Image (cartoon, rainbow, N blue to C red):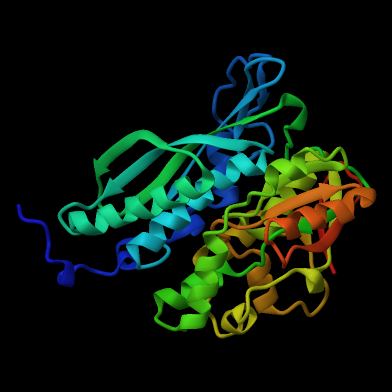
Amino acid sequence: MNAPDKLAEPRLTSLSHGGGCGCKIAPGVLSEILKGTASMPIPKELLVGIETADDAAVYQLNDEQALIATTDFFMPIVDDPLDFGRIAATNAISDVYAMGGRPIMALALVAMPIAVLSTQTIGRILEGGASVCRAAGIPIAGGHTIDSVEAIYGLVALGLVHPRHVKRNADARPGDVLVLGKPVGVGVMSAALKKGELGDAGYAQMIATTTKLNTPGPDLAALPGVHALTDVTGFGLAGHALEMARGARCDVQLDWSAVPLMTGARQLASQGFVTGASGRNWGGYGSDVTLPSAFAAEDQALLTDPQTSGGLLVSCAPAALDEVLAIFRRHGFEQAAVVGSITKASDAPRLLVN
């Protein structure tokens, strides 16, 4: 069969029922699925597993090294194949940085509708992913491909970290300050894009955010005052802050007015450009979130907005805050901001938004 005419190819986003990290199974459904899984023997070398829904698995190799292993893949969030590949690769590698490690190599996961997309388009997706791996200083050392109904691309990402520098999402402490590295609003922007309502400036902003590697991770992890680290992705800022709260068994206070938002995201959300994942997220964990009275619907949508390749969320001692912000600035994360705090120990952790 001849490859399809490039001019006749459909938009990439038209081939997917959901894009980017908005494809994630809703948190409530995921919990229901996983609760029946049989517990497996856990070797002492496994420093981080599935216990607190952390970003990656970490396995200690020796006194100086631990291996970080993670995978992430999804359907197109944009129509440009090069940009899709770049976003997917950046997002996958982020989990290595979120554990405090440095990536060492990747494997490509490629599922494509080969009767619909040309080999040139598929090649551009892979090229985009390879360009990000080059920027991260790692090779794509292999992978796996299948013919699929929907276009899916991502990576298995491997990294190394010193065992003492592993930063879990569950080790926040009362009194800690929360810092967010990237602005929120990717899901809203993607919803507007899919409906043809996102302008050039909004698209450029979206690509700049989603293709920015979370390189501050290892430097942050090396600070004794940094206690917990995660990245904000498909469950939104509220969901990942709640994961941090539940792991630490503490309440989390979020100052919504301090949360950096992508330019135009709030206006787009008020116009109804919201992903279905935002509602599913709220349905999965909204009962554990306390909102102020008259909290606007667009703000709730952004609070639960699925982030693709979102920012690092850092829980650190107040004394370490200046250095945490300085590290973000050195790596070019000018919008990094203090967004809340860890308040008190709790047997029923909640996210309190003011």
